[in-house]
Image (cartoon, rainbow, N blue to C red; front, side, top):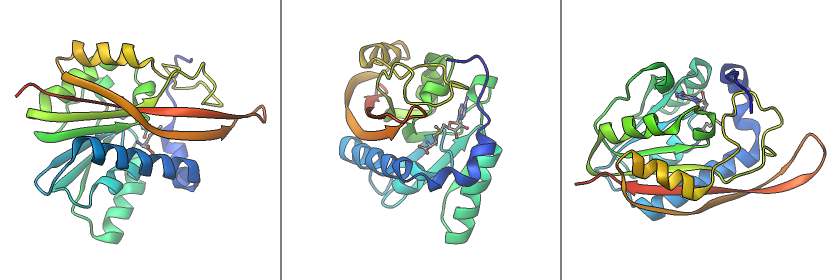
Length: 210
Ligand SMILES: C[S@@+](CC[C@H](N)C(=O)[O-])C[C@H]1O[C@@H](n2cnc3c(N)ncnc32)[C@H](O)[C@@H]1O
């Protein structure tokens, strides 16, 4: 792990060229749909949206998706997709670790592969709870503990994945109830050392008290 933040702006232009990353977002979107069952009235906020791989996969069948990220470069790529396809979706530049607030209220907060880039997950979960309507759902996907093997560089990686019990405690500390988890995706990845490893991605869901 590294104290420095990763420059996601530099990665934005080629982010979608990684087929494993695209498949993972689709698998996570499927798991979120199966678990939280969003409907035509559901308003979603996708936190750490990047180029919108998850946000766009969730858009069909819901009322709206607001996609937020701290990287202007990532949001520029997503804004181009939104304009090209004429999508009813909005983006916002938000860095929760710099004191920004999330736009709300919404019925469902999602996030994929962003929490291991946060120094402290609990204040972020508290802010997510603040913008959820009573009874609203949260669905966070991230790496199971990976011994630091998933990333080739530790820059901007503040957690080597998460132990699910620890993540559940973070959810409960933020006031969420009915915390559940499942495996959302499995990824095979070849590291800089040439070895191919298997990584699992959990989906943790919970509810804000009604
Ligand atoms: C690994 S990428 C995942 C992007 C997307 N969810 C996906 O699955 O392709 C992590 C994203 O989180 C964003 N991010 C990191 N720290 C953040 C913060 N404090 N506030 C908002 N976004 C953040 C980064 O800019 C980056 O786009």
